[in-house]
Length: 113
Image 1 (cartoon, rainbow, N blue to C red):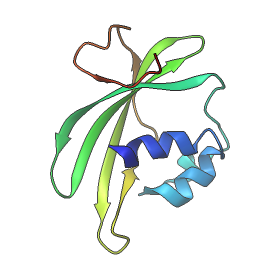
Image 2: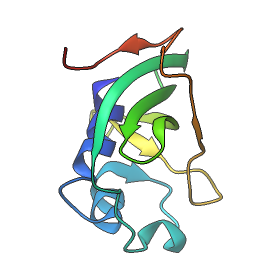
Image 3: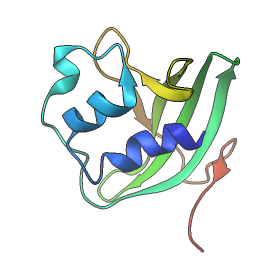
Image 4: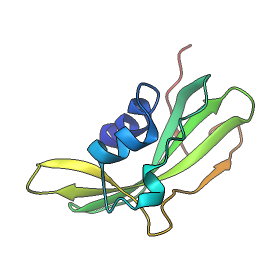
């Protein structure tokens, strides 16, 4: 779970291309664009959708300054030679996201009080 959050947190300090090069696998040329995450982004919560010792899918929720709470589907894969979890970039080159209810029902909340 922390590795999935680290992928997105790193995106606030580096370009999407830099993050993809260092924290992802199966990176397509499309994923190496220069888009950056919007300013005003903060972690709001997370939820495990699936988990095995080799792969996990985690919904990471961010409070986005102009959109409310947005979940980002974060597929992760264990890379044995690195002994680390990495973002498993889908064949489309992008992950899915959607706005969620601000109550975060079903998520583990991660907000400053």
